[in-house]
Length: 80
Image (cartoon, rainbow, N blue to C red; front, side, top):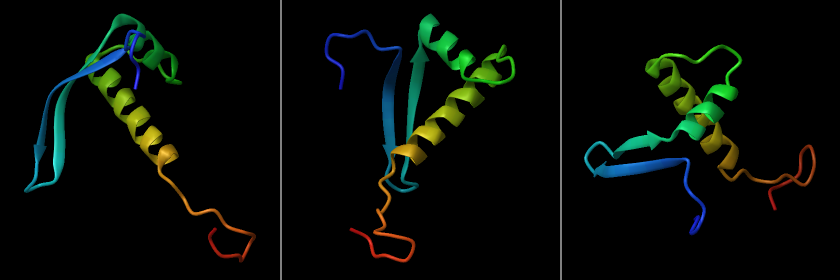
């Protein structure tokens, strides 16, 4: 977690619904964060809807890439 560095994004009003097991919050991106998100897209990101879609895609990729996966010893080896 950052302490002194300015965050590019802030989250406010988190709500966890234990019945549906969902998390809802307001996400605020500063101008630099918006530019960086736009730079990650192969197509132009102009509208707020396109920007939102790109942020969600980046979040999904980040979750997928950071999910622990078992390490295999070889092609048919067990996990270690």
